[in-house]
Image (cartoon, rainbow, N blue to C red; front, side, top):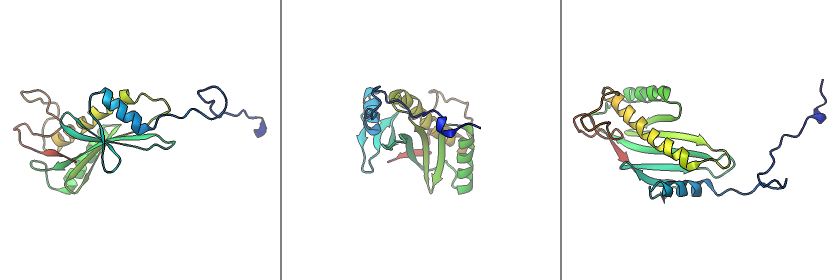
Length: 181
């Protein structure tokens, strides 16, 4: 048996190397705003304290926790309209299919609103801009795939203009999921 008092202390050494308190990091929400500014997305803080911005003509949000957990949630909300099925069970089944297909993107339906999110726990000093460069398009890809599956479209098919934009129209140009603020 080992003597538990003889085990080494594995507490992390602060980045400043002094052995004292670690240097304080810029709040996550401020880092998110700076990263979105660098990407040219003009972020604003909404009434709920989320960072709001437009990406590919879609209203998106980022919710940050500025505690020790450093959780960042990229999300959007879309109103569900025709040609999306009205059956709640069918809508939830499509959400479940999407949740199984993606590791980072999750979908949920509340009433006539589709919520698609991508949540991340960031270590100290993480590359926020790099993460957002991946997470934001992934959320929109999730919306597009949800819409395609809900309306019975072939997710691999492209219309004459290329890949459809964020699930806002079906192949005939009819509205299906509209952004919701």
